[in-house]
Length: 618
Image 1 (cartoon, rainbow, N blue to C red):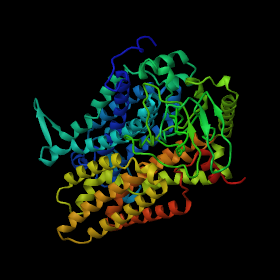
Image 2 (tube, rainbow, N blue to C red):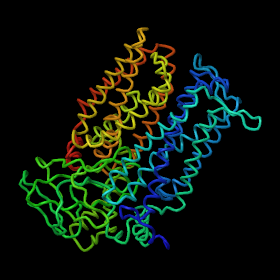
Image 3 (tube, rainbow, N blue to C red):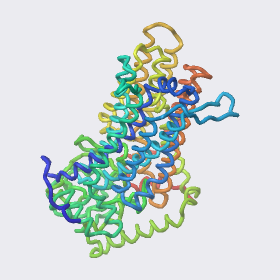
């Protein structure tokens, strides 16, 4: 790939093209979030101008995007496997451009349906089609962006790049709220050459701008080196690695699995397994820092071909951490938070000292979207010269073939039943918590609750969501998944009970209580139920079912999201405000029970240990 191996450097010593690629990909996350939040403030105005019913037609306009997103999520992994994650993002730009343009030029020409009683209604045709297309792009972006970031990141930035994805989604949501600020100053339209243009049309058209910028930036970005390697294009992959990571790019392993734990030293390269608490002897090899304990997949969470991780060397005399698989498409690490001590019950891995372009991240819980893939050994390891590593490679390759042979039928096998229940139940509970009723209908919620300035409340909600997402990052690995989920769902349930109660009175101070309850609800969500489900999903699934079950769970999440967003305004108008909030409070209580009785803790657990706990006897 001529011309890729030279370029300007940044202050961190990494080529500028890496940061161009990171920013370009993150624009997809921003577009996704913007599409989620942009209609929140302007739905009433649009319904009046385009002559559709806000309750039924508005619910369709808002929720139909999620149907498109479900379709996009189901197909995105296969398409990216075929053309590469970078090219897939280039194609995906078209969905945001076309969807945004159609939505912005919507007319009163309606699509109507009858025979459904109170659910009869009409929606503008162009707006309907535009939102579906935008949703398809959003669903694809929810997979393409974290995948591409995971596959281009150097080791010391791997976790933070994963975290930037969720941050940019929340920035996009907040951006969708902020562009509605002119309505707070009674600025609803403007005139150019005698033509009056509604501001909501500008808001929808603005979604095209980051898409065009992303397209321009992607033209300068390389394809994923992991995908190129997976496709057998090793020369191109080597050139891209040098372009992204510098002259030592071919000596750096792209981390795709475990966090880097424990103090680092300059000990020689070796593979060390320590089982002091279990009485097993250790093995020593000189080729790789791969743990035989860790399960890997050719096709994992969303069909991504993954790469490898290199663990820094650890002190022989100190306590050892263990490797924890994690999931970066919704959360990553933002710096070093100190050591996560897992030495009481687990072994550890001592690997290579970090290369000059990597640095060493000590005690940094790096959360990753993709699990390790033995098929990527040759990115930096001559596994054929080591019989142990070669046998591991062959074992994993055969496991991948076995999983592919089982196909979708594996999901109904008894041994995977507990995994299937958890893998589907946890993400579905995330949506049943009612989070997208806040993201997409916060203005309506604030108005119903008697808040005097709904637009300001909506913006506060977006800010809280963004800030808590960033601040909660270290707690995922330090407190554990189960406690965070329990606290999150319990807290959201209590906040919804408080919100329901506050809507029963008419006193002015109850509006302040309602605002506090909604903001507290968002804090509890962002601190647990937001990031943890996708981390957990990656940790509990073995390679034989990971790809299909993760795709199914993602699609079902979008479908449940669609159901929640569509039914919420109908619930407000049928059973009332307080009862609607109590329904979601009850669902969160059910979530607490589900987590308490069915979830196992995965903190400091290797994949083998997790699978042994969850696989049922045949």
